[in-house]
Structure formats: structure tokens, C-alpha cells
Length: 95
Image (cartoon, rainbow, N blue to C red):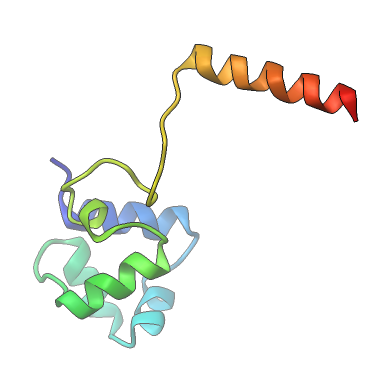
């Protein structure tokens, strides 16, 4: 199970955000973000919800309860992706 601090840091870095920028969005100090990422403190439910909005993900993902990053995320197998690409190519050729 991934811990909250690791997941938060990954999301922040993937978004190209500094700790300072995230702190400003949450209206907290930079040190609070550092505490979260180092598992020294945990966010209140309100902050957790705001983080889920900032990163467009669920609170369960942030907490490491589920592995789906995006709400409603669907996983496809390689052969399913190939099939969908064939359908798209066919549709494009019809236009």
C-alpha cells in the first residue's frame, strides 16, 4: 500500500508544482506540505478534499486505498487498445 506522503509528492511533481505553489493553492505554509510528504502530519478532511480537486483524483487514491488515479478511470488490455485504434482508424477513413 502506497502511503499518503509518497502519493502526494508524486501527484505534485507530475503536475509540475512546487511545494510553495501547492501550499498557496491550499492556503497553508510550505512546511505543512513538507510535513505531509514526509508523513509527519496528515491533512484534515477539508484539505484532503481540496487536494482531490486540485489533482482531479479521489480521496481514496490520495490515501492509498485504491490504485485508480482518476475518478472513473478505466483500464484496457493491450489487445483492447489495438482493437479500439482499428475502429478509430476506420472511422477516420470514412470522414
